Image 1: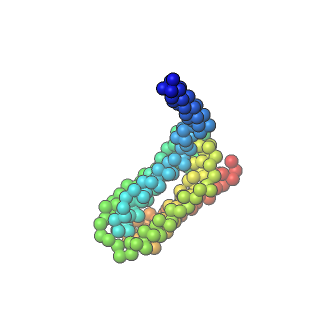
Image 2: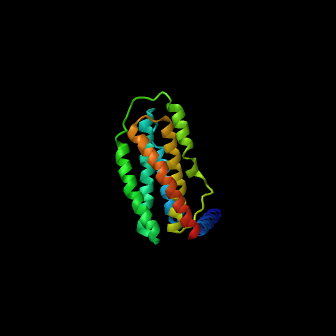
Image 3: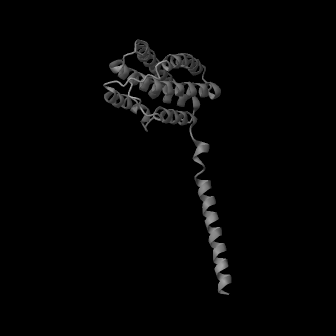
Length: 201
């Protein structure tokens, strides 16, 4: 009799646990299914940017981080072209893809430089600080592919501008210095364009 009661208790406990699990899964569906695609790309990009240990060469470390940063912009733009609806943003995204793929090729030439820079610690500190704008948890999420692209690309571009300004302070390679000046000019203008689009949308 005691054995039978123990068995029944186990069955009832198992049923209660299953019911609780089912209720939990209904009220909290898998986050991966509801994850915002645009913010997921931003998060993945930031992970890639910090995946390599700095080499100590300012030119190489800047190039490697900005390459991953640019790849993030390209992926976000490709997602916009695939799922977005707004033609102005699609035109913007095509320009981003073209320009940043070209810039990636340029930066790849410096990504393997090895000579340690004397001021690398200060450079790394300021370079890391320049990415803080992308980590702002107050960035609005619309769950609308067009608006999320514009909203996420604004801090993304601002981070690129800030990174470029750090390199202009510490960098040595003429081609990279010229690239950084172009990034500051072009992406500052693109930020204003995106802000205006969001305001009017």
